[in-house]
Every structure is written in structure tokens, then in C-alpha cells.
Amino acid sequence: MAMVAIAAFTFSGCSNEDIQIDKSLTIKVSPAGVVAPFTYEVNKGELTAVPDQSTLRLRLLIYNETGKMVFSKTESLKSYTGNLEATPNLPNGKYTLLCISDIVGTNNYEYWTLSNGNIGDDFSQLRISSVREENGTLRQGFVKNILGYECRQVVINESTQTLDLSMKPAGAVICVNFTGVKKFSSIDRLQLRTNQETDYVTFNAQGQLVFTSKRSQGTGLNGINTIFDPRVLTAKGNFVSYLFMPPTDITAAFIYRFDGESMAHYVGGTDRMTATLNSGDEYEALLDLDATNDITVDPVYSLTKRN
Image (tube, rainbow, N blue to C red; front, side, top):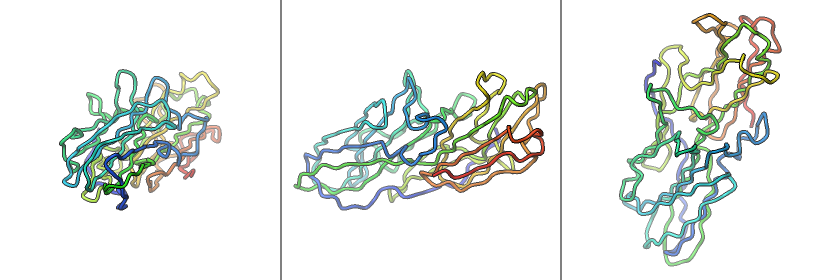
């Protein structure tokens, strides 16, 4: 896969709120907001529910004024409606509270890894990295790749207060919806390709998330994608998956391949779909094969914002 690193993307992170709390601080973290913006589901619950045999990992990391981690707690939840509660005993001062959510599969099968995330580590060195397979390809869990976060700066004094933190999505989601895929029996591959994928996430000096992505060289579309063989489907011919993407501009296209061929082709010719993704956006990439008798020339695809 020919890829090159590109400039990082930043968006609003820590809010500079002067919240007065005390040493007996109680922190409650709710992850419900991570999936709340994603209101479009082809089948109810397939996007907003935690997948079977997986758990929602919720982490709270607290850093002091010098940027050193002084507290951490991890909770495993079965749904986005749960929460994490912590009662750290901290001296008066300024702190950065960081919450991170991700999905973990059976036997701690990860899609994101955290480095420099231990007590005493520096906030500026924290990195959240996409997990890659041995061949270098991105480990794709589709809805399991959704990453959430919240970052808040607080001031602790002698007043007692409970702090509620509501999390949000760290990127956008694309609902990839194939319909009528059983129509062409000679096709053995259908695929949506994009031009980039997230490599890792860090934080800048202002506490904002910074996505560093890999982008395909030239006009190639070798980034994050979804691929399947329509012949194995036993249903009427619909196939749905969801891609988690960084907040950035993307180029995408649907690909097909005829049985026995080694080369894939673009549906409808060479046209591409483009969009600018913001965190919390949800798009639908639709390929409607019921609307054509000639997949080689008809542009029966769309990329539409759904929320």
C-alpha cells in the first residue's frame, strides 16, 4: 500500500473552564455523547450499540499543572449508557482531565493503543495509535474503530463539587451501504475505497486533538476501505458497514471486479466522491446496483451527509 504521511488535523479539545472543585472531587464520565451524533442507521442499533463479545473501554487520565499524569482509572462497559466514576484525592491546583473511549474485542483485541499513558508520563507525549496488522494494513473493526474523548481543564480548591464529563466523538462516521449486490452474478468483489486513514492521535499545547493521517500517493485510493465478495451473501443483497474517519477532506470511490479478473474497476468510470468531514459528522456512501443494468458506466453512487 503506497502511502505518505500528511499534515496533522486539529480541532477543539480542552475547554478552558475555570471549574472550582476540591480534594474530595467526584468525577463522573458519560460516553453516551460519543455515538449520539450518529443518528442514521440502516439497521437499528448496529452503530450505537457495543458489538457482541466486545466491551467499551473508558479511561480517565488526570495531569497536573506541569503536565505529569497523577491519576488514572479504566472501566469496561457493555454499553454507551454506562459511566465511569472516580474520586481522586488531589491537592489544590490546576489539572487537565482527559477521557478516552474505544472498543476492545475478545482477549483484549485492540483497534487503538495508548503509549506514554502511565503515571508520571507527560501529557505532551501521549499518543493514541491505530493498530496495524503484521503486513502494515490498518486493523479494521468498522464500528469498533469509533474513538471518543473529552478534555477539560479544571482548578481544584477547598470547595466540594461533583464534575460531570460528557464525551464526544473524535472523528466522523461513514455508513457504507451497498444495495442490490446480488444483481450481477459475475462480480466477485465490491469495495469502497478512500484516500486516507488515521495513523495516530496526539495532543497539542492547547490540549487539542491532533490527527496524523496517511494519504494515498497521487490519485490512488489505498486508504481505509470496506471490501467483500457479494456471492457469499445469502440475504436479498444488502451489505452495510461503518467507517470511522478523522476530521478532514476525503476522496472516495466504489470499486468492482469481475470473477476471474485480477484488476478492479471504478463503478461508473473514473469519477470520485469528495467530502469535508468534521467530528460528529455522519455520511452515507450509497451504492445502488438495483438502479443500473451497466455498472461500468452508470454513476449509481452518492456520498450524502445524514446528520
